Every structure is written in C-alpha cells, then in structure tokens.
Image (cartoon, rainbow, N blue to C red; front, side):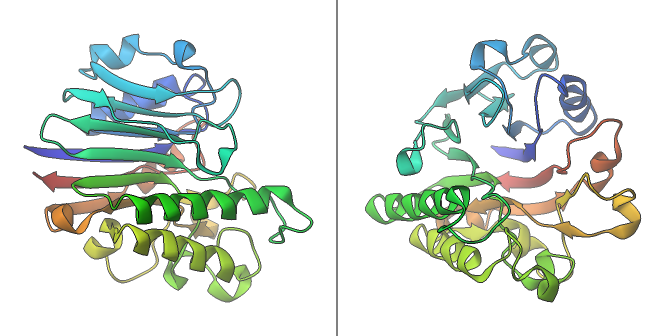
Length: 262
C-alpha cells in the first residue's frame, strides 16, 4: 500500500486552516502530520479537511500552544500519546495504519534562546524531553514505524545556513545535536530525508524576523522524517516544499514529504 506522508509545523491550524486545505488539495498527501496546532482537539477545524478526503484523524491539543494532529485519507487508529519528561504538554500522538505501520508525530520543545539549562528552564526541558524519548526507544525498540515532526534541531552542518555562526544558537548546539543523535540511535531510526537527499544545504524553516527570507536564505532543517530499518528502504521521493513558505500569511516552516512503498 504505497502512501505519501507530509509533516508540517503549521503554527496554528485554526489561523491557517486555508493553507492546510490548500496543501491537501494541491499536493494531496495520503497522511498529513501537523505540529504546533495551538488548539484544543474539539476546536481543530475538520469539515473542510474531511471534504478533501481526510476522514481519519488523531490528535492531542492545548489552548494557545503545542498540539499535534494526524489527518489521513487511509484508515487510522490512535496508537498512543506520550508525555515525555512529564511536561504536561501535547507534543506527541501516534496513529496506526491497517498495514501495521505506526506513525509517531512529535513536536519537540524549541528550547528558548539561551543554550544553558542552568539559566534557561526551557533548554533543560528540551534536553530532558529528548532523553525521555531516547529511554523509551531503548526500553521498547520500535519496529515498522515512522517518526515525523518538528524536532527543533538541525543536526548536520549542511542543515543550517552557517554551521560556524550557529554553534552557540539553540537548535544547532553540540549538546542538542548529540542528544538528538542518541535518541535516533536508540530506535535505530533512519533519517529518510537525508537518505534520499544526502548532499547539499537543506532547510525547512526560515525565521519570520528576516525581511526577505527567500533571498537571505538563512534556514535550518528542523523538520524530519525518520523510519525504522525494517521499512526505511521502502521510502523515496523525499522533498521540502520550500515554495509553501512563500504563501500568504504562512507558517515559518515548510512541509516535508516522503513516499513509502509498503
């Protein structure tokens, strides 16, 4: 059952309902995973999405911040929601397809502005969240699974516009990269995007602060698609829809796509 999956930090699903519907209509992924929905589950818009064929959904929500959701054209049942590091945040939801593939949708804490947990609690929460994910994957090694989401870390030197200038900037610091690597290794996750696109600068996020984000191109690859080794070889056609960042009143993230022949 081949299917195409997309992950997108939407930065308010209610504010950008029209953009979500546009992506669904123009690109038609079979499964769309959203992060930073900023809405209680019962307030997430669904009517327009259902009209476009997205009849199945699982979600966790909060008023005003966080929140994750999976919309699917394929039958999907909820398969858990973990509160890593006991933060009380809606940052994870899992769904299972009829073919047994589990899709994990994560929104890892951004970590604030100062990369020092002694003076910035948010940075500590980010590291603790990733460590909790790592420990969970060690305890219960995932299989036949896909992990997507805004992991808020750009791990490779070519995942950022300037490795040297961002070494002390949250999202690319050595401790974050190391902790994310440990989390990835714990589940033996394969970075599908980089398996498909192994070379070159690749970004999925551009700051709102840049007056001309496209020309300046100071991006970071914060959004990821991973898969367990048993199904990773079935993935192909990875792409970042950079042009979506240029839509009217956009999210600061662009959607990331991959297709799986399963």
